[in-house]
Image (cartoon, rainbow, N blue to C red; front, side, top):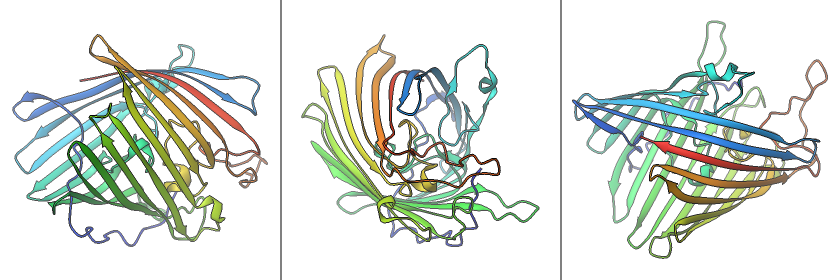
Length: 366
């Protein structure tokens, strides 16, 4: 587990004033303040790798189920259980009757108290990310925040939202280990009518002693999207990340960008994206990056997605193809005592290495 040192700037200004945290989930109202929500996914995927002789084929599943209770107009509590609860990025588990160890990895995914009063919202505990995060570019969409989150809201001609959250990564223990904390902030602006737009800027401020002993590592981001619903649901957007910190990182490893486009062709939705991601340009040096991509750091690549009509008006399904190649071929990591590389599994390394993934997903929710 990666560790980071105490982050001393835990309360950055509340961002000039402006937003509400996103709701935790859509939920079925059961009356008396109780509501229930959940989703199930079946996924089949195949990975190819130019450095390996064989492809990897696997079938996976995900289950998440939760409940909320509105105590009064100011206080709501919530809990969610999920498969893959011990994973930072992915709640999926692999199917296989001969190896069912991961099937037991079902546990607490969210547990939070939400406080609301006028324009202010606060969250305490473990809760879903409220960031504007198109294409899961800012961080992987399955990551939950663990700690404190605050937001304020306002309207000055356009809707403004803002938040700041201090996330505990590793708590201080009795042997004196520094606690790990990650400060995340974002300011969001949105508006429009027949053509809508949304833009956000923010950052993740952290330390990573296990990856680099120096104290300060910051990744700042900007993301934006324009949507024309009347033009076949056309949507275009993109994002940019920039690393600024104390690590000895080459300039070509410090930035990342992504562009995407989506549209509907009759009942079918189509999406395309292109990525160029430097090694240090994702939060936690890529550990918090999008894991739908085969690798989340040090790559250039593209993806194509086709969303097909629902099955029985209840099950959505899609096909996705990912293609990646190494961005920096000479990137290397230290070796352990046995002489094996300590390369993290989310970093694409190797000169001229190419990987691809094809996925089919079936999803339903309640």
